[in-house]
Length: 444
Ligand code: GLU
Image 1 (cartoon, rainbow, N blue to C red):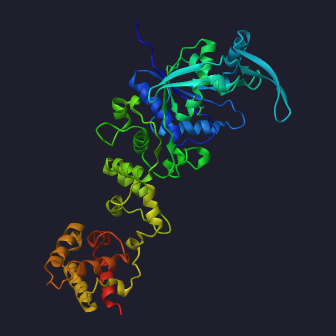
Image 2: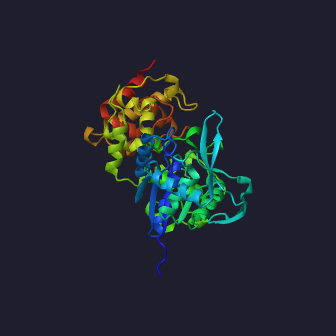
C-alpha cells in the first residue's frame, strides 16, 4: 500500500493586502508540500461578501509569487456554496446539526444552523506543541451557517479540507482555538483528522500580533522599498525556526532540503528590521555586478540633478542594504557634491588642533601632487597611492594623517561624513578636484 499523498493548504481571507504573516502561512505550507512530494493548495476564503475583495486576492497571489510561491491548485470558497449546502442538509438530516429560528441583534429573524455539540473531551496532537485536550462543552451548539445559504468559516474550512484531501493543517497559533470545533465537525461528517501544526505569531516591534489592521507592512511595500524576495523568505523562516548549526542564510531551495517543521518554536518572534536589512544586504552582495549597477542607476533620481552616473555605483553600493536606500540618500543630498561644488566653511577644514597655516600648506601639497598625475591616469588607485605617500611621510607633528586627508576630503565634499577623498577625487576628475582644493586654500 502506498502512503497517502501529502496535501497542504494556505487559506487566506482576501480582506487586505498580504503581509509577512500571510507569507509565513504560505511559505510553511509550500515548503512542507515540496519536502514530501505533495500538493499545496491556495484557497481563497472569501465567504464574507462585505470584507472580501478580488483586488486583495490578486495582491495576495502577486505578493506570494514575488517570494517564489505558487500553489498547485487554487479554489475560491464563494464558488463552492452548493457543496457546503449539501453538507448542511446532510448534517441536519443526520441530526449532527439543526435549524434554529433566531432573531439577531438587528431584529432580523433567520433560520440559522447550529452544530449539535456532543459535549466531549477532544485530544488532538500538534506537531510543534504535543497533545492538547479540550472539553468542548464550553463551545455550546455553535453556529455553522448564518442561514441555509450562508455557511460560516468552521464548516467551509472542514468541508473543503475533507473534499480537497488535505492531510496537514499548518497555520498560525490563532488557529488553535478553532481546532476543537473543526474536529467536532470532521467527526460529524466522517472526515479523517488531518495532522496539525500551529506556528507562533509574528509580533511587531510593539509586541502586537502582526495583522493588516495593525500597521503591518504589506509585501507590496517591501517590493516598493527594493527588498529582495530571497531576503524576505530567509527572514520569515528564521522567525519560527532555529537551525541546529546556527547557519543564517537559506534560500527557498535550501529550505526545501533542510527546514524541519517539527522543530518550529512555540513563542512568537519579534520582527527585527535591522536583521531583515542585514539579510537583504547579504543577498545584494551575491548579485552579479551588472545587476547591481543597473539597479543603482535605476534608483538614482534624474531630477533636479541627473545622478545616474555609473562612477557613483561602487561607492553607493558600499552603503546600502536595500535599493530604496539609494534614493533616500540621494534625496537627502548625500551625493549632491558629486554634481556641484559644495559650500564649505573654513573652520571645518581644520583637523583637530592643527593650525590653519598648516592646513593651507597641506592642501597646497595635495594640489601639487595631484597636478603631477596625468589626466588619463587620474583614477582612485593612483590618487590614493600618491596622497597616501605624502600622508605617511608628513613630518610628524602629532596630527597624523588626518591633518592632510581631512581637509582634502572636506574641501571636496563639504560634508562631515562622506566617502574617502581618493574615491571622491576619482569620480570628480582632475580639473574639478584641483579647482575645489584651490577654492579651499583661497578662502579668507
Ligand atoms: N481564512 C483563515 C485565515 O485567514 C484560515 C485559517 C485556517 O488555516 O484554517 O486565517
